Amino acid sequence: KYTIMQIVRFLSSGRPRLGLVAEGGVIDLLGAATERGIRWAEPLFSDLRLFLLAGSQGREAATLVAERSRLPRLRLEELHCLAPFEPGGKILAHVVNYRGHDRDAGVTAPSKPFFFQKPSSSVSGPGDPIIASRHSSKCDHEVELAIVIGRVARDVRPEDAYDVIGGYTVLNDVSYRDFQMNEDGPELNRSYGKNWTQAKGMDFSCPMGPVLVLTDELPRPYPLRITCRVNGRVRQDASTADMIFKAPELIAEISRGMTLFPGDVIATGAPAGGGLADGRYLSPGDLVECSIERIGVLRNPVVADLATEASHVRAT
Image (tube, rainbow, N blue to C red; front, top):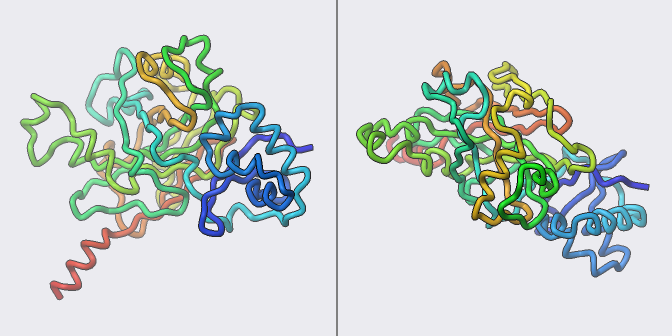
């Protein structure tokens, strides 16, 4: 009997689908449902939001389909994995949430949770490129634990927060620091604050994955080792237990007057380290590996902006 613990969202036959990560590989849940004629279950395994919304019934359906499947197991590392996120959802990201990152940023850690948004258009998956944009010379990495919401929720009390969580994944809050600090217009900082929208919202600036670990397997995400390596060298290394504000406080604050839907993501902040701390920003050819214990490793290469390369070709 399968116990539903980890879900992967991947592309096959031209459409996104969900898979169950199990011993021996990945079970294609959509393919298995189609194979066995369980048509009523197909929508659950085509859209992560519907699967999460179905709660325990969705997990029971996945167990039923997996047990009856005669399809060969797939290898996770050979799949075209997608971010465990459906387009149109919200990505609500916290600012400084680890001691030390406040020193990196030259700010005081917030006295209460404070958020910005990354647009859904910034989301990318495992193996997708991080763009060394021609508009920026300070592309930075930030490994973060991402909370994925599992139920419709609003005005959540801290003591009820874990009940609305569907699971956890790894997120890299790629940031373009020159945009963030308004380096080409520093006077804007005094009147309008940091430029969160462009600094955090460029294309491919929100890699996520590779799997969604459900709360059946991971009821509480503390303490877990969280690290980021660039070209094999450790740049960030901490424990999720070091967060200033943990999941109950984050969910309670951001849900005040704002409805959270299944599949919405809360990025919980990054530990110290990275280019903001020492000026070592990402360059084309780098490999960024974001890892969280019991969840997995998210790998993304850094590539040159294709528009820059095209301009160079024209110029030469």
